[in-house]
Length: 370
Ligand code: PMP
Image (cartoon, rainbow, N blue to C red; front, side, top):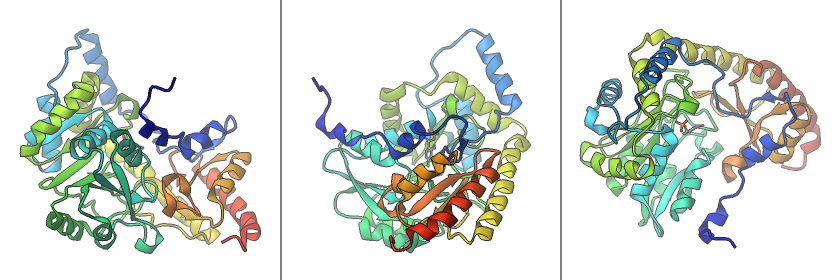
């Protein structure tokens, strides 16, 4: 018996998971977007102290008031505009569930983080991809979004700095104008906001849309699950109710960690960002030396490189060489012919060298394919 809704048949094992499952033991992991840095000591201490209290009550649904206050202060909004979630992932689910159902359209970037499409599938909403590929320099643009917005559009997901491309949106104001005129909220996934390599991060405002971020990447709290959503104050109660139905509240321990991270020495978080800045510069130099075409290395910790031909076949060949990297096709049709390299391991240089070697051999063989 298959008791599940037929719509869920669309949820297949992701290409990313398939590549991981096929990886040989000890492979250099340029596949996972997970920093290899430790949780700051002060954050771990605060959680240990909280655990030692042996008290674990629920928190308010929207999160501990102190944490909402710190997030609001850091983001330039009121505490009442902040809803604390179990990672950005849960925040995305709640926001999209609150906005769209069967018959409604959710716009997602192509290429883009696969969770957007998966959530839409679970909700029974229709996914419409907007071009975030080579023709747009991999950046979300007002023109590409305007071309995809229609009568049934209920939400437009934007991700900057972007996964898988690392590109940063430079048209925030123009995109806001398009969406305000259309009466459609933006859902801006800014989880990589601390990782912007040139200039300052420019985020979306929380006055006519939803802005999501968290501490998975910035404080290396991936598995503790802490994120948040910012939105107009009038929208917060309804979103909080949806979040209540999904999770009641984010884990108290994770929220205590969040307070410690946001009130601790800023250097604790900045040090991690600087590690990635150094790696980004090293990767940029390696790719330039290899003469590889790549998306702008604007932010996050991904390099999105052109490989031409069958990116999935190339990823399997790289596995044979002991390197995990993710084929661009795993992020949408516009990713085909590209490869995502995450520089989230200290072995990134060795891994990129292997990729460059394989690409030069591959270049000879693939000619004619593209
Ligand atoms: N958005 C993007 C673009 C991501 O890359 C990730 C994690 N890989 C998430 C959201 C989910 O993050 P979290 O751990 O906060 O749920």
